[in-house]
Image 1 (cartoon, chains in turn yellow, green):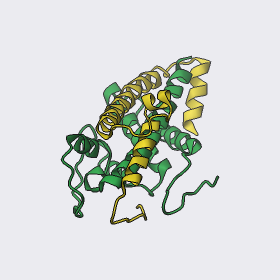
Image 2 (cartoon, one colour):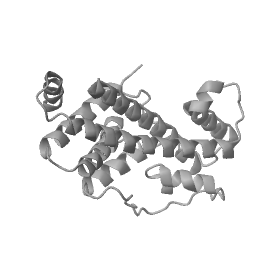
Image 3 (cartoon, one colour):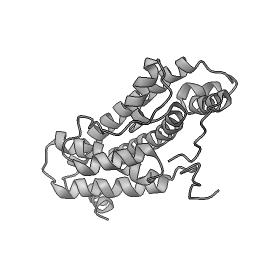
Image 4 (cartoon, chains in turn yellow, orange):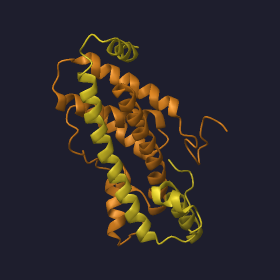
Length: 88
Length: 145
């Protein structure tokens, strides 16, 4: 829970948070923080798209991990190493 | 740099070791539980494990992690669909932007947050989601080699 219960949300606070968000996005990292005042709408759109793509990646990587874990039901030495890693 | 967060800023440092610990344990459980389960089922369980370990590693200091932990503990078998959590909505500044509404849907627990808190939660959620994806990619690379 945020303990910063300000009843008046200053523009400064919002633009600070927006800059912070921007620096987390892949595009924001490329550009660096030279753009102090990002368009809030554009940033929100980029953030939403980024979160959606991350969710998709989690789905995709879960599929791939599932495949790889299934393929470990063989007797190779590598499979044994992986099995012991997962057993701990 | 401290490992624990202060009340005003929970989890300032993202703990990758905790993430690895929780996720590997969860993977081991999935692997143990039913080795002959269907691909779809195992995939779904791994997906749930990803969000659960993210939330566990982040700790209860964030709305998104609390919401995820609550959801995933209550019904582990039905997580293709989002479970909408009914919470009493405190009065908040009305924003007309549909972008904000989309963000509220994407970030767990985002619906009942004020705008400022929503942005804070979003930044935190994105950091952890990013780390989780990187971890899963590393595991895929490791298991594929």
